[in-house]
Amino acid sequence: MQIKTMRAGPAAALFGAAALVAAAATTGPATAGDSAPEYTVVDGYTIPEPLTETPGDPVMGRKWVINRKLGNCLSCHQMPIPEEQFHGETGPALYGVGDLYDAGELRLRMVDPKVLNPYSMMPAFYKTEGLHRVRTGFEGKTILNAQQVEDIIAYLMTLKDTSGARAAADN
Amino acid sequence: MTNTFRTPGASALAAVAGAVMLAATPALAADGDSTRIDWGPYKVGDVRSGYTFAGAQTRAMQDDEFQNPAFLWLERGMDIWETPAGQAGKACTDCHGDAEESMAGVAARYPIYFEDWDKLMNIEQRINWCRENQMQAEPFKWETDEMLGITAFVKHQSKGMPVDVSIEGPAHEFWEKGKAFYETRRGQLDLACTHCHVDNEGNLIRAETLSQGQANGFPTYRLKWQTVGSLHRRFRGCNKNIRAEPYGYGSDEYTNLELYVTWRGNGLPVESPSVRK
Image (tube, rainbow over all chains, first blue to last red; front, side):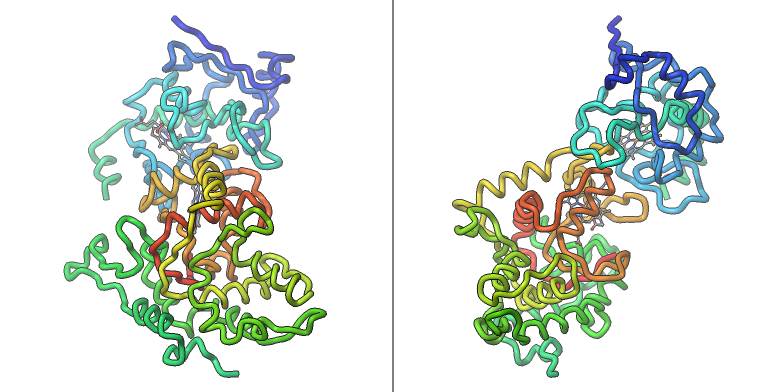
């Protein structure tokens, strides 16, 4: 088994896991992301360990995927969220994605999809390294904080494929 | 004031040809399949103007000079063309005469390599170069109504003519830089221009249909802006949307990018001033 631990920035190195737990406990849901992402990719395809101690909340996750300042997932993906118009189509539809992957695999796809596909269009939602010319005010910050990532994973796990949902996605 | 834009009969030959060419309304295939619209000059091989991705209403607004709000800026530009300014007491027309003749085809060739600067020059920069050197007038600031008006006026004189920028000789290295910019991921969202305008042409990103990001319609009246804007404003918008730090108006980075983006659309008709969502 190959384990690769990511630590971004001096803050992470200094405070390590303690900083992460503190951030998770104190960061409000709609604030900017953590500045010290830390996670462990296992065998290049999964992040089995949750990023926070608090289990993800699927109801909050559904809000984050809609929120244009946070997940904004609908800009690229179709999801079973009928009250929102105009779902994007640059990424695959996510109906049934909870059947396709387990939580660890979804976590890696949220945290840093480029581990799986270096050419991916999908942003890394929980990474600060290797970015270029990040706009003032966003430098060193992740798009989502750790709890938001966990909430979204919990929501995605509720997306089980049904032929009805498929049909809705196709029209 | 005589409004020359609305009397194409008086235009130079080439301009008339262009106007007539663009007047042809794209024909919807008989079965109404929008993928089979004959886009006429707006589609050259695989190269498609933003016009072909725009909605029917937006296109109609662009096509009708009385409805196209950018024509207000154009009229402002025509006034500027004729009004003396600066220490030299000259107007554009004193050196260039009738814009319909002297400016026909100019915008189709810009940005150009400008030897004195040993770098590229676009139309806005040429206009300010004339103001500073020939008229001894203050340069126009980017995105002022004056700058947008005179730029739209000058570019409009090439309406319908195919974009034909050169990337030969000394221009080539600047084209290379523009190309590298276009292909470089940037911002917190870590996207390059290519991700949206090459890989996802025609796809929806939320409510927007991604076009090829062509330059041939600028300056453009953008409904979202409620005003006319330059190509560099558009670049800044696309950079900011992916949370990348934008470059300045008229910066070398954006002028090089302008050459690359304009070159991608060689063969498309100059459409200025276009209307976009």
